[in-house]
Image (cartoon, rainbow, N blue to C red):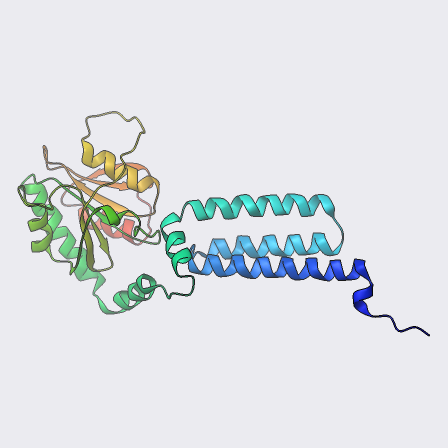
Length: 261
């Protein structure tokens, strides 16, 4: 009686290697999503794709396997392209802990959100009354780390006085946008790629820049017109003008994810 070893069964060995390869790819993609995309929808997409690919492989469903693999590749590619800044950081140091994410959680535990909103209202209303042009972007889930590289790092606590000083005409930082993360002014004099979308009405470069950043992120951007003092919000590619009296209410709704009608 001859002893048969598993590695002598070429078909079985190839099947095992393929299965291990699929699992390894899934683990790698899940790790990348955890480090780069950081969104629950991404985990759900990767998990569903893995289950579908694994089942189609185990039951030899060739067409389902090909289609599921193609969808996964397209989905991963789109996700990575929309997070290029985080992808570069990941490739530079895959095992580096995300200081921005952890600091964001720490900041949110410490600062008074209501006080922050009131501080922003004070600054914006004063800028509006004096017709001082301004653009402030409030970072939410989408990282703006790649965008702020063209600006000047500030890393200072939010205060109405500092914001009004930054946008005061004649100062070196008054052109461009201020990026705020939590209760920290991360950078100033940041320039965005303006929107190419045509829209009615007379709008300047600040409004077009605000729409531009709102089209590629989930940020909330406040714009104060230099000509009229009008206050506007740029969110999800839409521009919404508000009065000074309604600013705080609308701002809170946008920051807390409540859609405005």
